[in-house]
Amino acid sequence: MSKKLTITVDDEIYQGLHSVIGRRRISRFLNDLARPHVLRSDLAEGYRAMAADEAREQEAMEWVENLTGDIAHERG
Image 1 (cartoon, rainbow, N blue to C red):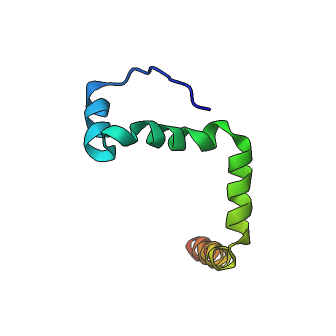
Image 2 (spheres, helix red, strand yellow):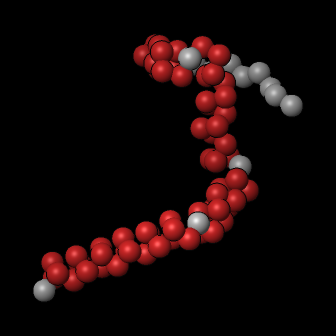
Image 3 (cartoon, rainbow, N blue to C red):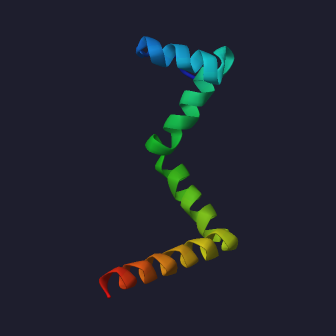
């Protein structure tokens, strides 16, 4: 079920939404933008999905290891 909401935005934001997002897509864009901030289950689900992505986790681990090495190098 959907609810109608009236919001106020600056003129530049309004024009930008129309030019970048498109007239018929603004509601969905704002809905998708707000969702992870107001529905915690989506956030937790997103973290679970990221953790299940082994390639992404490997890249993150390599990044952390390289960062730790850079810090040790700066102090030494």
